[in-house]
Image (cartoon, rainbow, N blue to C red):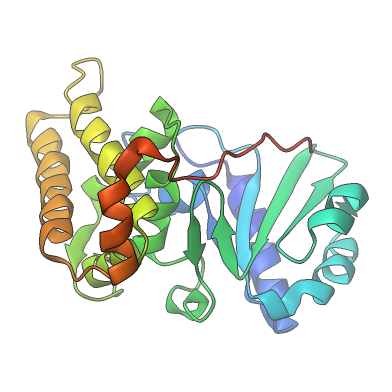
Length: 250
């Protein structure tokens, strides 16, 4: 299934126009995952009705005039209450939503992105893109397959040059026990899900995904762990380690 041209065209239109106004819009979510796979024969492609971005926190007051100028309307009530951290805009002609996180991506866990948005011209870096999916406590099949897609189509490494940066994953998970815990649980779920024989992937593809999961889990074993991490590890899952996320009415 090819990615819908109108979604890609609109994404590129927004990123290019925003850049001209010194606004760093970087794609996150399923469409970002799709763009880090092959243009053809992507085994996990699906429909992408909405577009999700991250931008720097200092762009907060630029977003409403920018999106109004790009023919979007503001979700005024949501943006008034949450605008310092997250804003939502609507394309009335298509019903498409634009969801924008400012500075950090915060759902079940917090992913700091300030200062890392320049590393890819279109999406957030692959390390954070993987973690943005792996941090979902109630992981569904769609998000699990997004993780599988990242791992199948992208190598692991020690930098952000078209790789999933293991050093960055270790840094973030070594400082935040909760993020580490949820990510570990979900990576093991992905290992199980890719064994599903109904998935249109080869045995070789399954082993690539599972071996890269093992490599990340091995990284967790040896990564430096902060004192706060070690103290929280002693408490374990007896205390909730994640933020409960409510569905946003958009």
